[in-house]
Length: 76
Ligand SMILES: [Zn+2]
Image 1 (tube, rainbow, N blue to C red):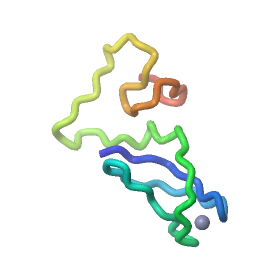
Image 2 (cartoon, rainbow, N blue to C red; image 1 turned 45 degrees about the vertical axis):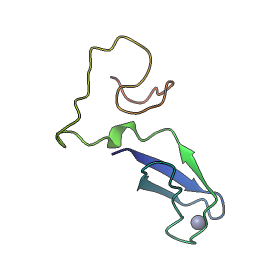
Image 3 (cartoon, rainbow, N blue to C red; image 1 turned 60 degrees about the vertical axis):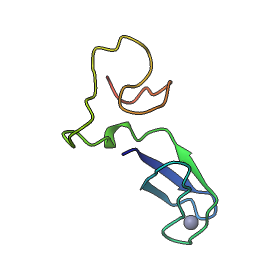
Image 4 (spheres, rainbow, N blue to C red; image 1 turned 135 degrees about the horizontal axis):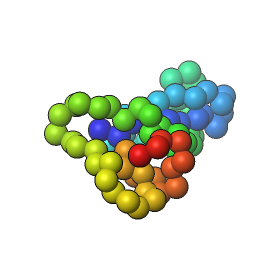
C-alpha cells in the first residue's frame, strides 16, 4: 500500500497517510482537508510485506519504490 507524506496547508503539520484510490487524508491536528502531498515518502515503503517485489534492476530514472518519476531521495 502506498504511504504518502502530506503537509497541512492550514497549520503546516506534516503527517503520513495510507492512501487508497483517490482518498484525500485530513490533517490529524486540525482536520482540514486542504493538504498537499509531498514526494519524500520513498523510505517508508514497507519491505517484506509480501506480495509486492521491488525490483532494483530497473534501469530507468523512475523510482521503483514509489510512483514518482523524479524521486531523488531513494537510491534504487
Ligand atoms: Zn492542520
